[in-house]
Image (cartoon, rainbow over all chains, first blue to last red; front, side, top):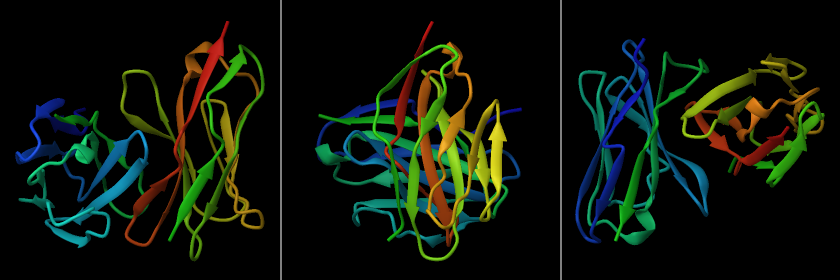
Length: 113
Length: 111
């Protein structure tokens, strides 16, 4: 069956531009997570959705970062006024909830010039 | 806050050698514990998990036991293969089901 799909797979943009990253979770998965993987910091939690609501946004590094999820399915992570330190691989995961396994997408590699 | 510390790599082993990758955690309460693996060119995938003290997770010949007294979840395999070459991440989970990851350990197995 289809796994978690993320797009684009690679994104190169100039400092100061806005970017949108998309995640299409596994059908029927109610929980959705965004993580960031960078060389210096390893894997960091960003935000968690249960359905369309985000009970935990504690990992978002600044107010330039926002995310939404619509229809209990697709989620978009938006980074405004990108900075070079935003360069990383952004990973999305989904699960059926609770401590059921989180299934990860292949990520979006974001490079800020 | 919660944190996970795992041994730094890279680790290079000969085929059929014994593998241990150490992992310790700090957390409030009793987290669930996981090992994830990332094979070259692939995404993260769950290798095994344990949800309470003294539980043993196992998969593909890998094992890890949840030790509350030492706050550890060390990954072991008795005989590694070239196909086990990957980056291994230890993770803990609590609260809102977010995962806290260690920095990863790169394993290379040579024939």
